[in-house]
Length: 563
Image (cartoon, rainbow, N blue to C red; front, top):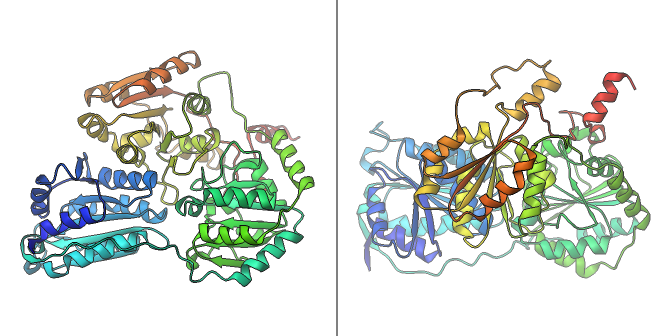
């Protein structure tokens, strides 16, 4: 049948099972929005306050559900406003399709009004960028975009459509979505057998879990693998929830703000199985000495990650769920009681601690952990609050932490939390923010209010850029260059002005009662928590140093006193 390009866009979205789109209209994309009007009962559109909010919301939807997130924007500044959100999704391997429209084909390349080569701009931060100039190729391009976004290592795809291709007509036939199969063609069973031999000989094995295990849905296989190897488990920020945070084997996060137990144990282990992690610099510390005593076995779906940041001894390329299934089927039960006992004793002797005399970020996070269930989705912005959320909340299931890891995007969490809530309406969704991050995209409270999206926004207000100030304190001689935010902005009034109920917590005594009220609200709610400017995230590994050099506040005090 003959359909206009705009009709083809909507029909392709319906083919792919898209139920929610986040976006902002404009002239170039107006034909698609006009067609979307006719399909309001089939596709929900959330009008965000800014295009960046739309990209983050689509990202949060994708991370929370495992499905492809979709966002719309018009040409020029509308399209470029998506760039930060697309880059965020790219760094964390999030399946997203961004659909933008451009000027008509005849006007391309002439510096026309609101023209930008967004396909060229987005090329380094997408798996693929398309420019569709004619309607005849539109349906096939959109289908390819969804396939690419989900295949192998997921990621964002951009489809830019010339305006003429949204109004011209072409023949359209409905097709079933392409079946996305798990990548297994490159799995080498010989290497699997060699890896198992290494684990049989190991006396001190460790298992290190990254975001790839979450993406692969390999939680069950991972738990079986851990139990068979009989080894302690550590994870990255992106790997949270792949292995339950309340299990005995779990020793906390690895890296710059990881636990002392995780950092010291990885430095001591003789075999390290790395599952779906890209060895970020925030994880490895000094790469020359990372896990220097260990035979390193890396499992990843993306061959490009092998030997990119850390040279490994062996690698298994393929879908993590499939790889672990094969390893589990070949392995007998192993026992490492002496090593487990040593690591668990270390865990007991080196707990994370914080000042319990006043209201702090860790106290609020622990209280949230106590008051919420295992299906709660925690979103975060980026900074100290993000690290506290990683350290003090126990993630028991995958896809329950939604956070910007690779790009570290301030302003990400509020949009992402709305997307997560739209994708998982039956789950409680909380966004943890700092006051600096909240300022970036607080306009999205208007979106939450407009659609009555019941997200809980927790703001840790220390009136500074906390993580940057921490670095200035520790490494820059306390020269607080442009990191003090102490001004007259009243976040409670801002929230109320945008139609959102708001509370303020100023002491520990108020915390539980206010949090209970906020969690029981049926609409969006803000909770501002007043904390000290110089609260810090510990433990910490200084940039470029070894993981075993991790320190906390007590270590700094000893250093100052010369002990």
